[in-house]
Length: 325
Image 1 (cartoon, rainbow, N blue to C red):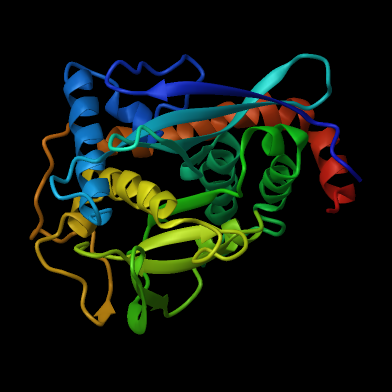
Image 2: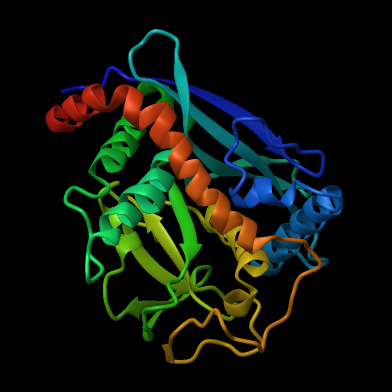
């Protein structure tokens, strides 16, 4: 069954003047920065960190480390389930674009990077929590993430996606603090040293239903590996500059939001388990309220339940049952 969903894609420039729209998930990394008294300084500092990291990784023919800058777009995707013009905000991702100040060339970067989704909030903050209130031992509900995964695949296969983006997305996340990562001998010039996880996580399983596989790499001069979720071949489908755009963007966000891991003062060893209680780390000069972010995830999950899942449940369940690529 081919999807009859229609999508509206909006692009918003993410710069020091960015202000979140009313329907933006306010727990989203980039939106969280753009709030409060320090909003403009937060944004300015974050963008400077991204550009500095990009130039450090793209060091060839770049003696003064200022050849490149990264432009970021927020890609906001609304879905119309019934085709009646009634839309719901489904996902937001970031897209990088790379400006070469030496040649004047502007290169399209990778879409994905940060990934946020109201339906994922609903799955983790409503469905999973409610399910485990009734369980003596933690377990995963049947068909957990199935609808979200199919909706994501349908979007990637839509005309809207192919008209707007040249390549599949790469989503870059923090590693899990309840898993152990083993360093391998494999090393990529940009992505760095590859690590392997000792077991699959719930996040991995969830993203697998979205059609994405994962590999873990610690880029040069980083202190911890990043999780890269992708389709196809991560190492050959994208250029070095494209990969550097994703690394510099997402490593910056992780230094802000997970300083215990990504701004730690000790580098990950051969056998590495992330620790969110690690006190030996440095803080960035960027204000961030982690507690608020966790609390709002539940509120946003309930918002998705009331405004998307309940009104369209029958239609969505029927579509999901019949959906096939």
